[in-house]
Amino acid sequence: AKGIALGVLTVCATAIIQGSALGQTCPSLIDLRVRFMDHSTFEQAVESERAASKAAKTADPDCALYCEAHQWVSFSRAADFGWNMAERYTRFKKGMSKLDSLVNTHPDDNALRALRLSVSGTAPRFLGEDTHWEADANAVMEVSETDFWAKSPIFSEWMSELAASTLEQLGITP
Image 1 (cartoon, helix red, strand yellow):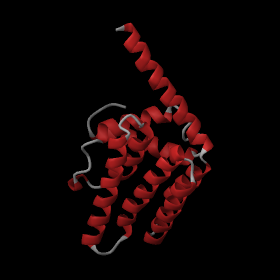
Image 2 (spheres, one colour; image 1 turned 180 degrees about the vertical axis):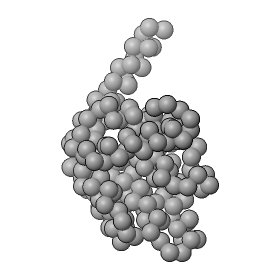
Image 3 (spheres, one colour; image 1 turned 90 degrees about the vertical axis):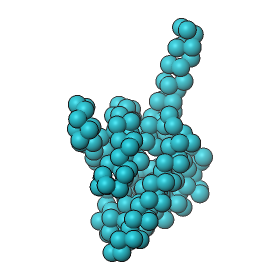
Image 4 (cartoon, helix red, strand yellow; image 1 turned 45 degrees about the vertical axis):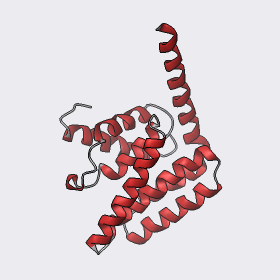
C-alpha cells in the first residue's frame, strides 16, 4: 500500500511540476490569456479563437493542448456577444462540449479543468453547465498554487476570484 501511495504521489508531483513549467515555456499561452481578458466584443472573441487555433497547430504537443482549450474557451465566450439567441446557445454548447471532451481525455489536468470553469463559471446556471463546478473550482485553486499562470497575474487573479465565487455559490468555503 505504501508503494502504491508513493507512486501516486510521485505521478502527482511530476504532473504539477510539468504543468508549472509548461505554463512558463509556452509563450502562446501568455498572449491567449491576455486576449481572453480583453474579450469585450464578438469580433475580439473570434479573433482570440483564431489565434488559439493557429497556436494549437504550430505549438509543441503539450502546449498545443492548452492552446486548443483556449480556442474552445474563446469560441464559447463569443456567445456572450451574439445577437441571435439560438446561435448563442449552439455556440456555447458546442464550445463546452469540446472543453468537456478535452477534460475527459485528460481528467487529471487541473489547468484544463480551470479553463472549463472560465466559461461554465460565468454562464447562467440554467444552461446546465454547473455540474463540474466544485471539481473545476478546486482545480483552479490547485493550479493557482503553481507557477502555471505566473506570467499572467491578471488572469491568475481573475481565475482565483472566479473559483472562490463559484465555491461560495455552492455553499463551500474556499
